[in-house]
Image (cartoon, rainbow, N blue to C red; front, side, top):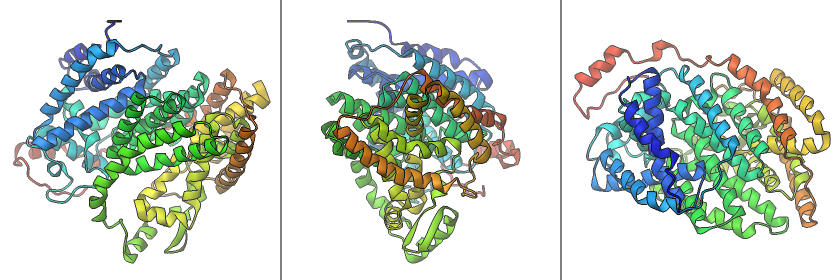
Length: 582
């Protein structure tokens, strides 16, 4: 039995030292970083006790333990102090059990990716601006969790006696962030402003882990991470969505979804009960943090399972088991939310409500009638060079038919695009999850895998020439289609790329099934040149992103004035309801 001290235990003394430092600058950064690591510690120990290593397992178990502790806290109407006690108990119980687990070597590349994430987080620190928009709602819930005792679900809702928000009925991520504030002994506002800087390394590491589990290649894992970061953080300029990693929607998309994909493919490769339990916890976490995203990520995973099954039945039992393990807690959470959702205007909307929604999102839709409409194909390609190249390269996955990534790209691409671009399916899908949400399912097209896998196929054919081709393609696409990142689509991307991905992907899926049944289809090179090709392609995107790094800093006029904040804290009675414009 190895009694080596887990490195994450060092976060405890680090937190003690950090809390002696000022609540600003480096001191605030250390407080938030140490508090975040301490909160990840129980999940890491429980995952290790179950024989599960890796950042994905640690993160989902950390959230899962917080979910269980919050549920008990709400049941007995206690405060977050009880949650901290329960997490400490879980860590103490899991610590000796974690020593028995076999330790797996940590890939050197993961450490380098984490280091790059720290650098990206530091770059994000100075451009995170002020709390505004939806962040004010989330900050309000965090503050209630942090300040109140005798907590219940309704006590931390958006409005007093207003009914639970169906998307955030169980405030798991709000509770996680409120615990960071409590551990760091800082105001929750500081967490909303700067926790994204602390979470950036985790986002990069999870994207790397996702690629490693899908491709089983270090170089393509790095390529997957680069594609993800380039499309989400760099192409929009100003840090993109990475400036809001602390918000539930971004957390679900950039942290939990990669964790789910990594765990699912690890389960498919080596199904165990402990891994099935971990995947189930991941499903519960994602369903609590953002319910519709739990449904959306299931779509490409089902597409993967279908292509693998039709291609000879490989992974059929493991894929079905993984989908069941992930899906059962999602179904349970959705069933719990169903009565809340039924009370909203977007569920089974009236004709007037539907007409209002269609008008609101008209720039994203092709509308034939109130019952026949679909997402514009240009919206799918609107996020710039990475998305466009991924769509164009998707059919090439057929040449690697024997590989799991090929099934994910082809099955996932076709299933998601068919749902989004069908005038018959899309309206019904929108009625189920709301039009606001159904549009977002387009973001679950497996862009990063299509780009990395396409690079692997091209590398097999072009060899070293793939590098200048990739760089030239990146420069041209960045100049011609840099991306449309307005709240409503204005220019969109090339619709042709989306149609090529749909119909070419469908033809490619048929071809892949035929090749796989014949034991053929491994035309790829997953080594250094494939990884460097993706790096060369995203280089122009990165240059653009860092050249426009500070573009999203909001004007100071949007901030609450210090005098108003002081008045609210000192003169307004506790639990008062305060209304104001934005």
